[in-house]
Length: 194
Ligand code: MN
View 1 (cartoon, rainbow, N blue to C red):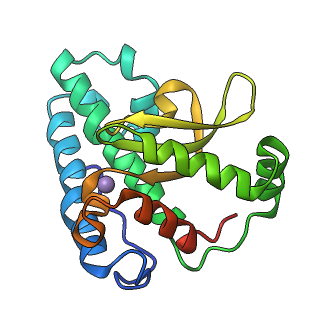
View 2: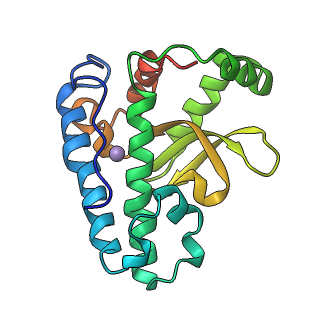
């Protein structure tokens, strides 16, 4: 096994009542674990890719010498592993405010509240399964809010992720069922970074 499920720095009920313990446990030990397992299973066919960092595989996805089906598998499962590893860090209750980032967000979007409003609207409108990101565009270094489908990692399209919200139903359905807006609203109560 090359890629491994990262340990969380906090317990599964640390984000209660906003994100419930059962969802956290299933999300981490089942959903994320499956992305890791399927990524490893795909890479087993390509010894030359073993040991290459995940970021490198994703950034160079189009030029990897692999079958098309395996390229898709690396995109989906590698992206799933990449995105979820970041997500657990964003949610960490021991995070402290990133003053520099908060300042830049205010400058870019007008205020933190206005940023949250735009991010929330974007996440609410995302059709199907995917993620909403705050990311820095490599081309102009500017911050932007972007919805990406499925498990597409931002780095595949030249975006450096700074904050991301998983809006797949598996991230909220147990507690919120179809009430995605409520899940998004409560996401802000968990996030300490901005
Ligand atoms: Mn997820």
